[in-house]
Structures are given as structure tokens and as C-alpha cells.
Length: 345
Length: 292
Image (cartoon, rainbow over all chains, first blue to last red; front, side, top):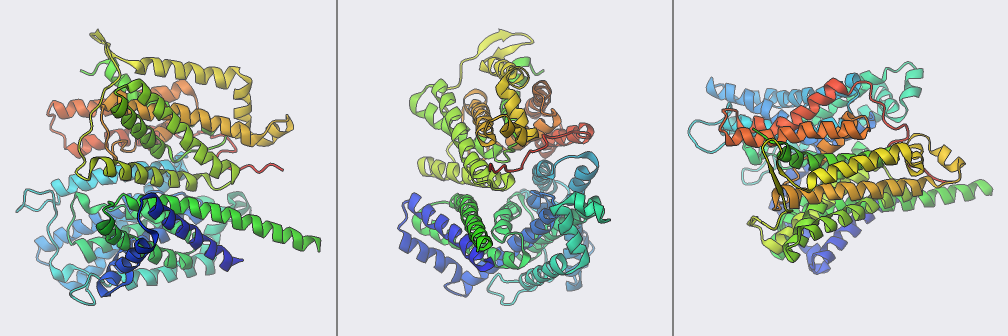
């Protein structure tokens, strides 16, 4: 049944894709071909797919952990931004004191994760101590983070040699190393996949991971078994925020090398459907984030050809969510019917 | 200084969606897609007003689109019994995409500034400033909500569907149908709020301009403890901050622009932190109900 359910999800998303192409009046065959080419046709297309997959994957993993703990963290975007801001703050200090050794890349990544974790922990604290729903607080914190980014790059982090609201550019030695100088693929890509495996093992094969899921599924039963729900809610939020913050730092150290108001590309927000398509299972999320990473890489290609803008992306995602839910319902019903038949025999 | 008329004008696109949302939540359905619903309604109102030159028709179109989106939520969250938060997220994405795409198709990528006819205003002057439909919309919605929840039998059913759905079934009614009624009311009132933002506040449209008002409205429901008058008071406070932010900018007060822009969100958060403790949501909020 598991495999069928995975197939069903993919079917729902594919249906959404075809539907979107039809709605936009793009011929389905050539449209799908263009989508395919934009993501997989050559080395460049693949590198685009990988570097878009990376922040999506990390944020989606973050969402898995928080949601499994029953904390509906919608604040991936804010945590990503704060992570990048923490990283950029340290980077500015390093550059101004001429400490640009490549050894600093690791601390820069870690600081990003810490920043994201702290920001998410604030929402966790609000939920645990002040009964403020994370769905609401994390969204508000997203908007505040976006303004904080704007403030930082036009104030404290602004480079002095330009009128534009931009931070100083990182020297190449502080950037994440790349595999091929001509392509974007950086060391953050394998790092993210490695983390994906670790999160999977932690969530499904350790005692703490089990406790966290127990709290998400039934806090009262968890409490009856001596598990303190609030502790794991906070833990879930901290890990979630750390992953999103790391995504921000990787995006900064691997791709942009500088912060500006356009740094927020909504990865934290887009990761929600990615995590859901992966049914909140880190292993499946590895797959769904490649799928969506490829989708975003390819929509750029499609929009170039078909004259539709980037607004196509949320349409596809929104329809994917509904397609996924409809297929899920269909599969659940079939499973129930099959089970009840089995019971009668 | 800011007059009452403009505070009301800025509070209405928060208060109406929040009041609508509270009715849906009372019936047990949370609509996290409120932001997307407002955007859809505002867009429908903008397009209709642009075509017909009549902002009243725009208001009507916005309300209708609000109901349509509410029915979409109902289809997935009530009939199919899927997770309400997930469906709401889908609505937000879809609405952002559809409105953005249609807008790009019709007006090009340059983001041409749309302007169209606004609702008429009555110049009361002095402390009152300019009054418009806002005051009527707010007063009637508040009166309706209070009557519905406290005096009507439908309100009793709505509240039961959100607190203890089994009681609804026991008295011979359908939980799903009652929840649909709650959602349609939510869509109508929140849709009016989104449409009013287009034809009453801005007289223009841009795909990103709801700018979190839907989320702030959801926060106001929690802040107001699902009570209409408190929701209105909270929304007035946010409307005031929203308006103040513009005034301070215009007065050239030396505060960084971003601090001002973050003001309504920070204020909402503070309000939740200070007053959120001890809030009890409807017991069956967010839980799908399958009738046997």
C-alpha cells in the first residue's frame, strides 16, 4: 500500500502539472518536454536543479520535524532569513578583520543554523508558555524577518561603497567550495542530502525521535507515558529552525555571496508542499524536493518559452497540494474498502 | 493626526476577515487560507470595478469569490476530511498564483499601477474625517455576529459543531452541513473585507498588497477569544498602527522604514503574547468530522 500511495501522490502532482499547462494554453507535449529540458537536459540544467533542491530540502526537513511534533511551523522563510542574517553578520566581522581563511566556512554555516533555531524557539516558547498557535506566530515572524532583512542591508550590514541596499560581497575563500567552477553546484548539496539521512534516522530510529512523534500524535498518551510534551515541542521547533537557518546560510555562502532585499526567494514557504508531498517522511522528502527543485528549474525554462511568468510556480504548487489531497483521499478510501473486505472473509 | 474615518477604513480589511474567520472557527473549521481568500476577493473586486466602473459591483464580486473559495475549502476539509491547515496552505498558494498569473497576462509584467473608482465617501470633517461604507459594514457585521452566535438557533448549531459535533448529530442535524454554513458566512464576510480593501482603501491592485493582513486577521480571532466585539477592538488597534505607519512616513519621522512596516505584525505579536494566555479555542477546531 505504501508504494501505491507514493505513486498516487506523484499522480496527483503530475495531473496538476498537465492541468496547469492546459489552463495556461500551453501545448501539453512540448510543455512537458520544455519542463524536462530545463531540469535535466545538460550539466547546467542539472546544477540548477541541485542548487534549488538544496534549500527546499533543508527547509522541508525542518517542516517534517516540527510538524511531526505537532508544531505547525509555517515560519521556514523567516528562519531562513534570520539564519542568513546571522551568517552575514559574522562574515562582515571576519572580512573587516581580514580573517578570510576557508576554515571559517563551517562556523558561518553553524551560526546560520543557530540563528534559525533561536528564531523558531521564540515561536516555540510562545506556543508552550503563552498558548499562541505557531501557525499564526511563525507567519507574523516571517513578515518581521523580511523587514529585518531590509533594515540590515540598508543599515548595519550595508556595504559602504554602493548606494544600493546590499551587504558586502563574500571573498571567494569564504564561499562554499564548488565542484566545477563554471557551474553552481556547491558543497552544500551533498551536505543537505547527508543531513536528510541523519534526520530520517533520528526521527524514525532513535528514542528521542520516537518521543517527538509520540508527542505530535497524541500529547496526552505521551504524557501518560512519562514524556514531557513541551520539551519535545521546543526541541522540534529548534531543530526545524536550525535546518531552515542552515538553508539560509547555505544559500548565502553557496549562491548569492551577498544579501539584498531580493534574498528572500520563498524557499521556506515553498518547502511546505514539498514536505507534504513527501508525507513528512525525510526519505520521501529527499525525492519530493528533487522533484520540486527540478520543477522550479524547469518552470524558468518554460516561462522563457511560453511567455508565462514566475507566477506559474505557485499555481502548480497550489494545484499540486489539492491534487495530492484528492489522491490521498482516493487511496485512503480504497484501502479502507480493501481492509473491510479482508475482515469479512 | 489620524481621524476616526481613516482608522475605520484601515481596520475594516482586518476586522471583516477576522469576524468571518471567527464564525468558521466557531463551527470547527480554521481557514489558514484567509490571506489567499482576501487576495482573490480583492482581485475580483478590482477587475469588476475596472470593467464596469462601479465599485459596488466590485464589492459584490469580491463577496462571491470569497464564498467560492470557502466552498473549495469546504470540499477538501469537510467533504473529503483532509487536514485543514494543509488545505488552507494550498488555497494561499493557488490564489497567489492565479491572481498573479491573470494579472501578468492582462497588465503585463511591468506591474502597471491599476487605479479605479472607489466607494463614495461622506465628508464629516473634524475628528470624524471622511466616512464611508466601512462604518456600516463593521456595525452590521458585528450586530449580525452577536445575534447569530448568541440569539439564533443556527448559532447554537454552529457552536456545537465546533465544540461537540456529536451533539449536533444527536439532535438530528448534519455536522458537515452546519460547518458548510459556517464557511459560507466566513467566505461572504471575509470576501467583503478583501473587496473593501480594493475598492474602499486603495482603489488599486497589486498581487502582493494584502501583505499578511489575512494572517493578522487570523491572529485577531485568537486575540479576541472568538468574541465579535473583542475582535473588532483588536482590529481597530491594528488598523490604527497600519494608518499610523503611513502618517509617520509622511511626517518624515526618523524611524527606519522597515521598523514602521513591521509595526502591525510586531503589535499583533505583542498583543498575542500579552493576552494570548488562557485562550480556549473551540474544542473540535481543526478536526475533520466523518458522519457515520
